[in-house]
Length: 176
Image (cartoon, rainbow, N blue to C red; front, side, top):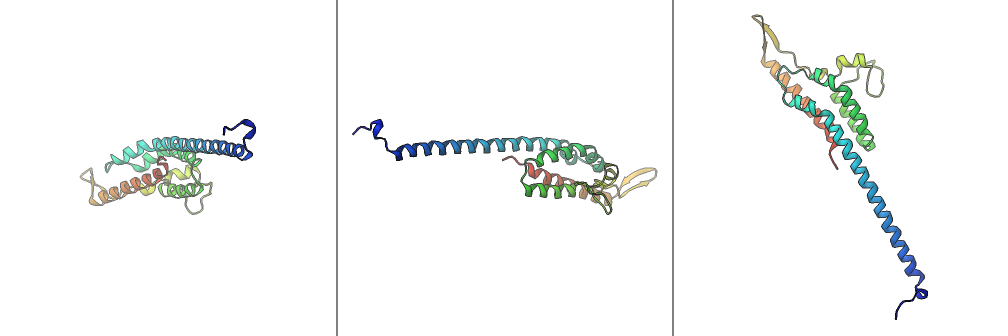
């Protein structure tokens, strides 16, 4: 028997409308999720780019490399990138990246004012990356500088620490 417009049941009509709404909702929800992922990936790419020069300089470093100088010169760029990325992170990840940032960038000491990330800039610069210092073990003999075994060990430690800290920081910017 053919279905005539007057014979359509209320159930068929309701089912069709529910199906249409469900389809629309799922499509809209997926589109929103895709946009969030795309926005995060863009922010993550920008964050990673902010650190590429320093990653290269650390990887290519020699015993003469001044890690403190490298990171102090990049501090504002890195800090700004961190602030931008945090807008795309979950609360747990924001807390965790701040902890890791403070391992990379020593920005606190006894009696320092707390402004979220440490003491004032003028005080901070002198101590911010002191844990990457590796100058001990350089001695002057016969008017020339000589690098001792102690300096080689200190350099390897500082380079490994810098590499590890950069890897930890950048782990928050993996593409989804």
